[in-house]
Image (cartoon, rainbow over all chains, first blue to last red; front, side, top):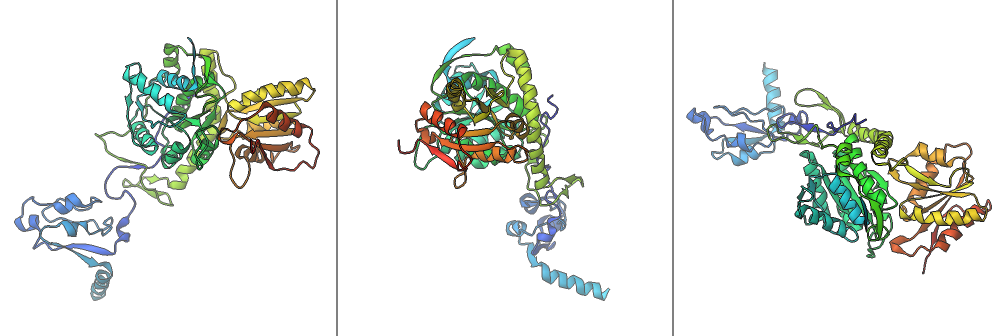
Length: 107
Length: 397
């Protein structure tokens, strides 16, 4: 009789990128890392990683040269705000897209 | 074991027998003695549960939602404005499909303030996705609380057990307290398959999109509308499941058999009065009186109000000449809530009985036997041009 017995009947997800679909298209500004100022990249050893720690979407990798997964980064700018050396700048997506288009045309 | 106690204590003893693990409730008249009894039982180690004190009804239900999500059997209770204060969480608990049980000790809703009984509080929450059961006496309170846990856990939908403030909550009646060991067999320890687990963290009730979409592992997950459709469909399946659970209860304890609605002198009756809660019991006397005078009238006490048992309603009423709905709640600006539901259920019937509506006893306004007698008799002897409106009985008294 109790055939329904308490299976999950609502939405659920494991934490991590992709939880709400490909949210990269939500972005207005893109975080761009200047590796010459980024602490782990500059020292070539595991350190700082405040951007990785603070990213609410978990899309920044914990590598000597941190990478941002732009498929999912919503462009909130918290990483840029938290970076102690000011290595991350928020850049208008529209200007980057124009630049990319010009590069494509050249190629 | 027989006991003479209040309806609130009957509910508390049912909760104790159900071996709940978490109780979170905020006192409100006329529910207060129920929560007081539960805190006393927990304090005295008679019920091994956590009693979590909270600052509001919203938090009370939020605590129960958290507890149930972590796999605990949880209970709360409230009345009137307390129920409305937790309303956001009431909808949430149903959408989250948590098998909670809540007693609603029915009381009129402010403003203006009233602490006395009517059904407006729980009726106003009828569209939240909970199962709603209205009971008629103390025996039904304790039995239904126990059955409600099994029902909630079987279909993963929360259940409100609604009983009248004062008429039932504060009056004393004899009732039988079911045997503990038999209840343990009827309602085994709660095993929730899907619970929050610190070793395997996840989000429950995460944001959904208007469309179904793949999750991070590429598996298509249902969207909001699909999840809500599932709740609606499974509410419907709760009707036969409740019947089966009631049958199992009857086998174990010898009581039950009419979980959806109980009828009194309805067989072959020309007219059927429909009502809910303790009022349905009072109407039995009036029905007896009218039958003595030769009016063939019965009373149908509707227990299961949501999901609405449409088929059973049709079967019970379609052959009557007339149906008289007497209720203590309404959809303001329209008509009696139960009245509207019953008319809609009867609409497809070929030979539709007339349906009349009486609104009575709001905010505890005295209901006299003569009110019931006069109203029912007026409908049973009504001519064809009896106006189809909700009639308010007992104004300016």
